[in-house]
Image (cartoon, helix red, strand yellow):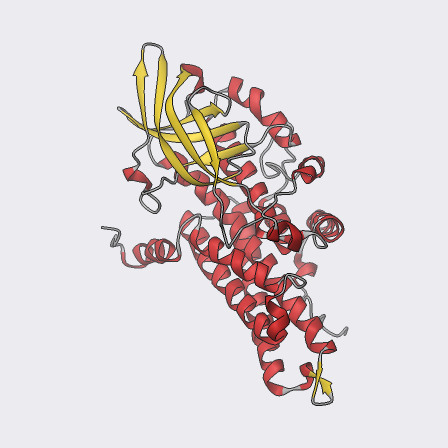
Length: 388
């Protein structure tokens, strides 16, 4: 019987298929070669590595869980594993892939016309066209049903007015999936970003997700043809289904950040000496490492279980909330504990820990706050809605 690997304590890798392992290894190798050495500088400079988009597209990671139109069509578990490995590099990198695939490509794939799919999805899968998702507003976050962005008919056209806030990929995008309130309810619109009246303004002075391109979208009398409407959905069901897709990737991705922090702490504890021996030889440090390993591996088992359920078509959105709530909490706790092991070095960008800790503060909030996911599960348990 072989000795357990401290970096895969429960042998979770052995539970994966050959294709799943290959995808995880490919993305991990890419991140280690192309991202790890530079991530601290990109974070410090608030720079998104645009030059990597082509390579990400070539690996088939954009819309990888979708079928047809140039998409890879892999299973949900493989998509989750890719998200984990990307976020081990930086949450901003995983956010780019999540938004492109789950928030921009997915609604076109799920609710778009055949013409819309053919026009946008192949180029988006290759990384030649970038998308963003406009739902959150400056004063409307957790209550999207109260959105103020409007869409009114004007002859055969639509005219959109409003603003969206905290939009990942907003300044990179060629196409924005914008949700607006119309007379018949909430509708989704495909808005080319060169449309007159559309503006994407970069959000500056962030202390988290600094590698991510984050924008405010402003729509001032943006005129669109009828062909810009997503015909397959009306109401909040459309954007909420997209959020469930993105949250699934997050429940895997956050553990990538957590794993990176755990591994940095483990390496540091075996090399940093105090009182004549490595600090990993002291009981209190070992306690911290053991706690991190326990929670990380439990989170990974949860992610794999939910991935298998999604692959079988049996993953209700409430269980996605379960995974997102638990695994982001787990990752933040690991990052904070790892920082204490690295002590003063833990705040330096020479190590990944504080960068991941800062990023995870955003991951805790976006795609549904901790409070919202708690209430989703509370309603599931009691049958009572506590939102209002």
